[in-house]
Length: 352
Image (cartoon, rainbow, N blue to C red):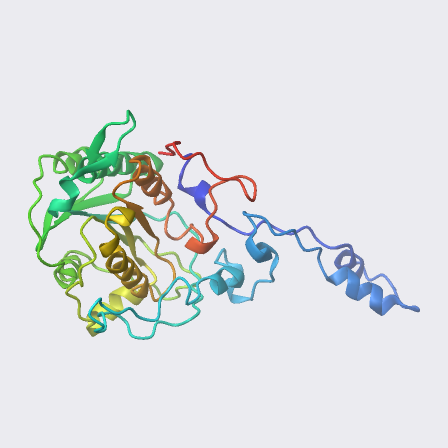
């Protein structure tokens, strides 16, 4: 992975234009056509659109406030209503809980610093996680819980190698949420609680209980200036969910809104669903997946969906993409994981 700093997508410094050098030396350029020539010199050559430079975002002019290593306005425009659904409906036609009208466009400008992370990993223990449907590396069938445990351990150990100041906590989710391991920078403590877990039959998804538990265990940082002052740390929750698309128990309180809108709180989701095997569940899992998108009012969270009948390597790839520091990674719609535009990564390549 090379370190969290390599995941950042900062804007490269532009070389000084010749026109600006001439003006700074006080050269007299008056004469016929000089005004038009000066205008041409002012306009920098636009780079071509590539996977690493989507829509020419890196070449757009930054505002005065965003010049301190912040996300460019071009990236802010990418977090549109396409990635933040305006609302979802349950299979029976009733409205799903969640923010009613998230902003169609958001521009979050925070310093791109590699500050310590407090990562809360939430592992689902619903009975569907124990079904042997995923295809492992040797072609045999395995379950999502086993693969999730391995990929979480790899994630924790890799993040610890990147920055030993990162802290991790483990929460298990069934009918309720249980805090298994408090914040620690020792990967061995987290991994010791990760195994020997049993799945249960879950009749509901108590998202309220999960968020209330998180609020009790964390204190969100506050800075005098969000755009220029780095926070002492950020809080990120990674939810690995593997149950069918059931309507979650969730109510939007003022305290909940404050946490979700905090620029230093991130809620990433890896959703494992039945996919194409059970067609009758297709609508419901898509609605639950869209519901998680509606919670992202800032456009800074990452979410992935993986079918339960696919290769297990897809889960590893999703977790590898979450290694990037949330303050340094681009918006998910701008993220690219191949060197050249149009290149498709190998289907069986594990990037962890």
